[in-house]
Image 1 (tube, rainbow, N blue to C red):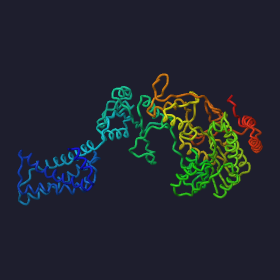
Image 2 (image 1 turned 60 degrees about the vertical axis):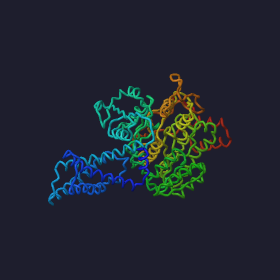
Image 3 (image 1 turned 135 degrees about the vertical axis):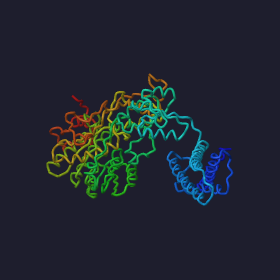
Image 4 (image 1 turned 180 degrees about the vertical axis):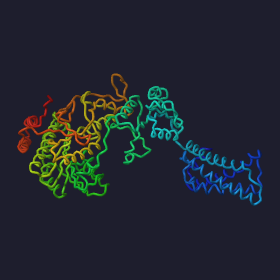
Length: 634
């Protein structure tokens, strides 16, 4: 019966619900006066005409005041603590005005209203109005919500954010029990908002005793490394972990304030991203025409996103993939305030590159177009070299002959002592850029040529992370080349920002001679063991690894051996001593010069002949001789 009545009321339109609420308040205010008289005289009081007038005056005064305070526009199911203060003020004002009316009635010659009744009216009105709303809220939530199982949730962190999250969860449902822990000993044993703060030493005992299956990490002021440790510890205990987004992400619109997001693999890498320096972001971009090659790729598309936010006058996006170019063009089209140009074509087309740069008066070039997948380039060496080497020469040459001021090559850690055709081709691309930098300096052309070298970016097309995600989604197994393989990782967003800033550092220091090599290195943090990464991804999926210690686990991890051209460990520089810090804490520069006696023009011609003849053995020998492919560190 009650359930049907609640559902019937919930189905009414807003105006009908407001009318019902007003009707109840009319009765409640009137009853408050009558109850006040009855309590004062200890009988069921029978009012005379004057007292009847005062009974009716109470709702006549109270309802307009309640309306003015917005208590008829608020939604009953969401009435919270803030509404209690509003009701306190509205009922208080009603009691004051009603008291003035009672005094006025007395001055007219009627009998006085006992002072006890005045006080009782205020207390009873507040109790009945507030009680009615909170009781209604409980009934609505109880009889209209879908049945849900009881949940025990662990909140890690008892700071402001942790307390707010715990209070919100506790208020949202009586079927949720909150357990809150913090690593601050001064808080252990304290009760905040009705929740006892426990020691982190009690984690395992709490999880086992109360069957906790999920946790929320709210350590907003802890650094990334500490949060990563906590997340790893909780996932290791079998919990599904979510994390409260940082305030800066909320301000940027990446998350809403009330959103608790799932933990991402980037949260476990322990790297603290440094906010970009806006001055460096703008030097080569604000008010300029900027060309991005490979604009549809992982790095290229993120460069386009970052550039669209820094005030370019024109953004030229180029890619050989029609679909990839369409996708990024569609995304960037939502931005306003600058001209957008899309160019479908290959970077190996020298005439096209010259025309694009001349017609669009390009000032800055970010050359991200490249074949980067090691096994694919190993299986297709001629195409890989043509795209990565000839393409770089074509773009750099067009930049040298046009009005381009800054040219930035996106390189890779695989160019250091390369073990693959892809890595060797990117090393040759670096040598080409260095050669153009020297030519520009000798001819005093006022042009800057540089390269930026870094490792894997999370989520890129060539990264293992999308592969692992797919394998986990399909039930495994996860395939590893080797259990001890390590790689460097950083987020695509951070990498793109640092690339733009590195180009600005190259321009700022071009005349000082401080950076002779002009190959910039991004701080990638510590290398990550790929097996550890795979295990963490399995745990983030609320699954377990199937191995010797846990034969009944969900996902198996299988080694398949290193593929052609792959290395066990990547490097960012040829020599640690050759890395020189810059003014940016995440960017250094490698003072690496080209091999003595290397003539880029002769190298280019020899490479052309080898590819034209499809001389595979000759090409490999050339890459070993010129790019150092296969040579190990001494």
